[in-house]
Length: 452
Image 1 (tube, rainbow, N blue to C red):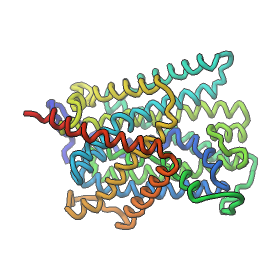
Image 2: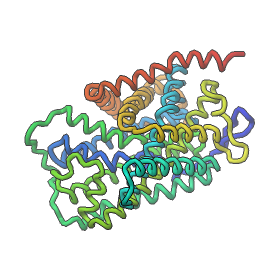
Image 3: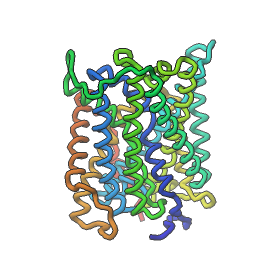
């Protein structure tokens, strides 16, 4: 395996990203705003904490089945771009284009903006600043989010070495915070018992409510495929990719279950229902107001890792597309000094900044959750196609438990998308229309960029 990849402008992307950084990237991409907000919303729909823990465990199983499937795809096709590469090779270049199209406009820029805004919300909640009008506070929060995006865009623009070091440090901080909350909360929350195996149902409860809760869980697990996007920069990708995808997902499953144990050990279930800032409430209940506010600030620091991971990953997708002349030519330009797709990083940061300025992203996050599930589903189905066509057979990682593992992911993911469409038809339809809008753009693009 070569230790670099030659690019269109004579420079090259080197294989410098270590297994530790790849695993950190998976963990950082998965642990974000979702785990810090969704359990309280789920409590309003499910009859007890046992049901919530079941959702997190089932969501983790779906994620790890997806990660194992991606490990096989990524070792068969160990190049930059993730789904773009798999869909282009297994189906048609138009599907590869559509996944990159969706990623460029909503898949990475929106999560960057959302992570920056969540950081501002948590840190100002923890600081408890008084005397500001709601309008002034909103402007300050947005300003802080813009500064944050600018700083981290600059960090990743300055090269993979600096960006990787920052990513590893932030991910370590995040894991320590989440682990510490889980352990300390269980030990110090007053010993309230939690009925882990009590699945009794009192009052109305439907499978649709369980499906809705699972959608929130899967949003929180999104990112299990993170290291596949940087396959072209990994040292020994055939070994590193499976290791990072599986290990990163397992770490997150354990942390999510532990954090939910802390939440429902600290907060009575009736008080948890509908609470968005559930981790802060659990912290205040377990440790008191002062410590709860301090932990709110720590949670804001944990969100920096997700923001950093999104900024790192996104430009690698655009780079892979531009190399095939199916995207803006600037995206294929590698900075001669820093060795990164610098212009892509800057433009992505600019789009994220615009999204922070124009408003709220609550509905948009639901909408992209549906849109971005389409392409991983097609990619996992591609495992069957790749085996049939014997793509990259030499040295390929093979999914454990094939064909049960990929089939479990496909059936579960399709069922959740169906429920999502029933529950939120407006956002789901908008997601489908966004993807479909890329079809005419693909033909215009190919015609324009591939002209002699």
